[in-house]
Image (tube, rainbow, N blue to C red; front, side):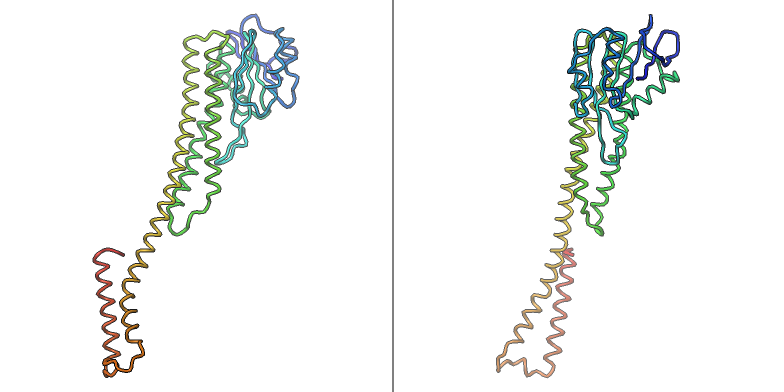
Length: 320
């Protein structure tokens, strides 16, 4: 358990030993889910409020979606954040549980949460505007989590651009369709994640037991707008993937048409030549041309001239 005390006029500081709510200000109790499954006991001792058993189970559930629930003494918000093992084109998420009391904020999260570690460092160094209430601190943490999703847009866009360039390269036919389908699956996952985040934060904002000032309302509206930007990006990228698939089929059809046009031109040239050779290949005894002294050369010359005329004609028509 990591405890940070926020008191007016003082820099935030870590508290060692059994925590006590300061006369003015509030506490942030940060728990690691894996190593502190009984975190609720310390919260009960500090606040005198017994955390609902179902909420305790929700905070320990790694598969729990973004969700809000409130009781008379506190609000619980589960928010799925980006996991550090995110790779190019893929991402993983885990839930962080927020328990918002009147003068205490409790977070239950994964041990390697980058967003909370970053906020904790900035708060202790006092290089940001310090929150005056637990609800303000929760906004800082949520905003840091959403900013990590916003930072995903550039690498994901680069991946799609690289695929699009490879798709239009005629020398190297594109064949990495499994990766494209996996990418689309990730985008769909991101879209559904944003929908859950929006629903949870909106429901909490509308039903919160704490009073939101006008300034905080604006900041939480901005937070929802950031989530919506990620959502729109996921939808737009899915449309881009669909367009890329259609572009692939259009490119394949275009290459097929080019090949068929060349084959048609060649067939148009050789078809009359085949007809001529077929006529003179018939085994009749009385064929006048067979007795011509220079008939062979005249026929070959006529066939060559006919081929040249047809070739010029197709070139004039821009059929190849």
